[in-house]
Every structure is written in C-alpha cells, then in structure tokens.
Image (spheres, rainbow, N blue to C red):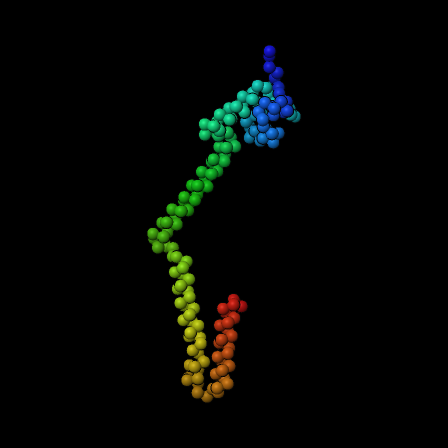
Amino acid sequence: MPLKAEISAHDLQEITGYSRQRIGQLVKSGVISKIGRGVYPHPDAIRAIISNLGDVAAGRGGEEEQADLAKERALLAREQRVGYSLKNAAMRHDLVEASAVEREWASILSEIRGRMLALPTEFAQLLPHLTRHDIETVDRSVRDALDEASKGE
C-alpha cells in the first residue's frame, strides 16, 4: 500500500502522542516542515521526529536542546570565570572581607562619636567665658547631630 505524500496534524498527533503545541515547537525549531495549514510531509515528518528523538537520547539533543545546552554551558563558563576572577583578586589582596570593613568603619565611627561628645568639655576648658548654659547648648547640639546622623537624616 503506497504512503500518502502528506499527513494531517491530527494524524501526526495520534501517531506521535505529541500535542499540537509540541508539534508547533518542532516546526518552529526546524525539526519538521509544513506543507500547509495542519498538513505535514509524510513520511518525512515522522522520520524527522524519530531522528530528533534519537539525537536527544544519544545526548546530541535536537535543535532546541542543543540551544539550551549551549546556553547552559555559556552560563557555567561565565560563573567559572567570575569565580576565578574573585579567587585571583582575593589572592592579590584586592578584596577584603565585608566583616573586616564593617569592623573598621565601626571603630572609626566610634572614635568620631567619642571625639564629638568630648567637644563641649573641651570648649569649656578653652573658652572659660562660656556659661554653663552655653556648654549645655553645645552638648545638646552635638548629641542631636549624632542622633540625626545615626538615623540617616
């Protein structure tokens, strides 16, 4: 019995068990071709699907799978490159630990805070003509400024 030169989308779905969407993906990726709306070359479409399945099973992947694999390999290569760059920068001491930076800044800010809080006493010693009220005003202003700075205002 001679084969027909074309097969309908419905028959192709029945034979392969593929959904209409999956067959559309295979057309879009170039695995199978279309003759017309809902019509595919027979038996070429079936052979192409079988070949594509063989490629996937052998690890060669179909066109879509190869594109995905290439994309994954590129992402892996990028991550490896970034990892090596970070390791090299750390070995050159171009990088510092965030916790070390945080400790150093905390120490610096603590020193600044202490120095700022000492200003009213220093003013009282250097400027004896200032009244107790004047010194308390300076002290309140310094404390308010430090409070505002600590709140990010």
